[in-house]
Length: 231
Image (tube, rainbow, N blue to C red; front, side):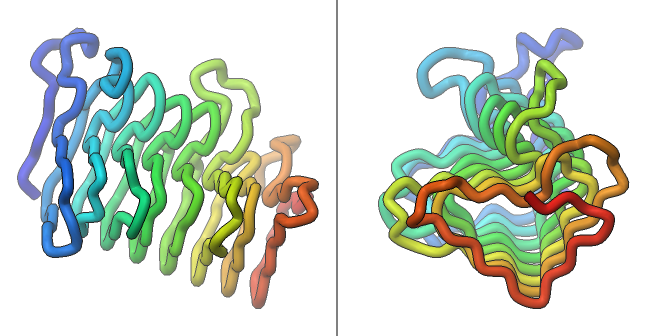
C-alpha cells in the first residue's frame, strides 16, 4: 500500500484537515491501494469532517484501502460525503480501524460496502457507519463503540441509519457484528439476511433498536443473536 499520512508533528493539532479531497467524482474514478492515516479535521464549517477523505457530490470506487487514526470533530472520521443526491459511494475490500468523529466514526454518508472490516472505530453516534442508506455484504463490524469521547454508552456502536424520508430499504447480507455495544439503530427501513450478532459484553445495552415510528420497519431472515441483547 502507498501511505498517505499527515503526521507532520507529534502534536496532532498540526495534522492536515483532509488527507484527500474530491469533487464531482463518479464510478469511473477509483481510489485503489492506499493507507490513509492520521488526518485531523479539527477546523470549522466543512473543515471538521472527512479527515481521511472528504468528498463533495461524488460517488467514486474505493478499494483495497486502509483507513486508520483519522479524527473529525463533526462527521466521518475516515470518509465524509456531502451533496449525495444521487448514487452511492462504493467501498470494496477496505479496512477501517481506530477512526473517530462525533457522527460516523469511520464513514458518514450513503454507501455500498463489500468485503470490508470496521474495527475499533468510535463516535458519539454510530461508531462505524452513519447515513440514510446502505447496501452492505460480507463485512465485519468488530468492537466499534458509541459514546466517544465521553466514554458513556451512546447510540449505534456499529451502524446508525437515519432515513427521515423512508424512500429506500438498507440491506445487510452475510455480515458479522461482534462486540459492538448498542450495535444497530434504525430510523427507516432495513433488511438483514444471514447476519450474526454476537456479544460477550455485560450490561452494554442492545443489539438492534428500531424507532417507534410506524413507518419504520426491520426485516431479518436467517440471522442469529448469540449471547446478545435484542431490543
